[in-house]
Length: 238
Image (cartoon, rainbow, N blue to C red; front, side, top):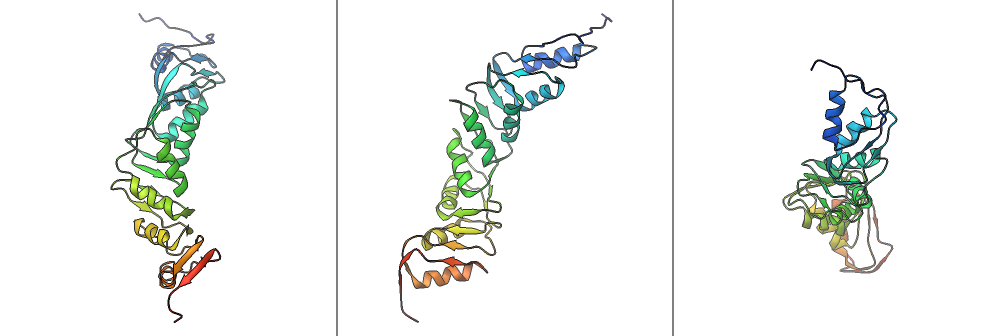
């Protein structure tokens, strides 16, 4: 009918997020603060955050939630918004860019749950973090782009990303150092779709052909080459 519902005295509103949201819509006067226990099922990460915004100083018990889905950043925020997290939960990442750090955070929080990253378009972060993120995903994207940001990279990590990213690209323009053997560094530079203008390198222990060091020097702009671990430099003296 045309009657009103005053829910201002309510202390808890429980159910799925959709049910709780509908209940709040149905109330003509909402409680300022209320707690919620989410029932078993999948929830969208942004919905959990919306509930956190609406519930004042109330708490959210998400211990029964089976899935938290959304962008990697949204899932991390949703886990932070829950006052009681599920022990294990699955996540399907929506089509968007993800930071490697967010994927790692989900893996650390989800117990025995799985992460479906098949729709992720980008995985950004340091080379080592991106390699770890790909390992953390239970379903990898077929193709994904990566921006390594301002960071130091191990050459073999760049090559591992190139192997995993299908037709994706790797932007390394802000990378400050690429370390490894000369051959590994040369391969990493070939694997990057956008190279840094200047970068430093620390060569790992071993012998190198002198001309390959000269090639590296020609490619690294104003960068430096630390060859202190080299055991041999072979070639003509000239």
